[in-house]
Image (cartoon, rainbow, N blue to C red):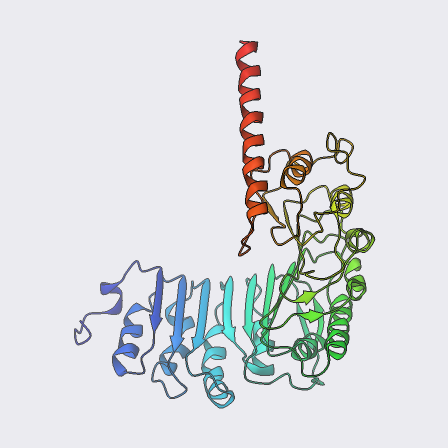
Length: 391
């Protein structure tokens, strides 16, 4: 097929999507020339190395595939030197893709960032800033903006690199921001927490306070031990609907601190925290959370489910309940009385069938889930009986 003189379009005239691993051979480059057709809208390509003969073909991507909307480019042997050689080819192709909707790519350097900002159709951008180290130190260059993004997904070596990246931007108009840290900043837990505090402060300064709806931190490695107070700067984002820092920070948090943390986000739908600590919220904090954020559909945190003082089992929250919950991940919480905990949860979340236990192995929480499942069955039977009696 590769030696056939027929035109490219005659082989794949309606090809829309392709995933390809570049093995560094000439046949891969020839194959790309055949599959780069005007109908292509999605490309997932892994480049072998900086010496790959695929790169010149990639430069003509915008001409051959003008309607491309989704693009992922990964580099197999990723070093600072190889990325510097590869990035000009990627920049040349990407900068001319005016219909590009979603892009996942390695660090293209400062010049590449400028070109990406000119792609007005771009809605989702994933940037892997490892390991080019373009952001080891703050840059004096101020890039204009990312105005129309729905998601800016950043992977950086440390918190400091993310801080330097956001400092270089005049404004970030993205609706969602996700930052992945490969490893924690060297030094004491206090210094890591202080750096994270600086990052959150610069985020509040650079982001459109009315536009940001989703914020997520992911830490690959040991969690940063910090206090809930460092997230105060995020209170400026009043329209926040998703806040996920599970696995990034370990926060000791009481009932009062939990309510203070979420008070500024009445539209919150997703809350994920890491708080495996000696200071834990109780059901009183969870009830306060439901009062302040009535739209919650997903909750992930650790509570002290052994402290039930002051909770009325017949009406745990005085009539308040959440019927929208889809995920309740509190399976790592300490529990003493499975039946009482199940009764409380059933009162707070009438449609909850089970607690998400994740990787936790706990006989008591499995009992809680058994009771919850039984309560749901009885409730459904009661509804069916009422419907039948009405007929």
